[in-house]
Length: 83
Image (tube, helix red, strand yellow):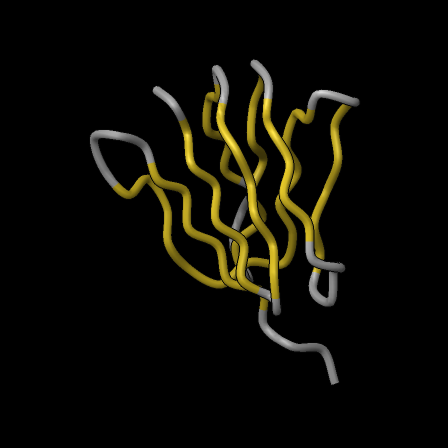
């Protein structure tokens, strides 16, 4: 059975997104990559681009990213944006 994937996107000003998702795709230093349920633990830096989020049963949402970091562990994804 597929486990739920939870995402939180945090900027210095606010929590931009918090909820269950199907997928998140973001701009990494080595190129774009996606995280799905069951992804191996990872910590990576992010570069300028867009973060595409597919919430459970909803339309895709995009968030701007200038730089930041992502951590994924045990189906919990946290994205910390610098601005």
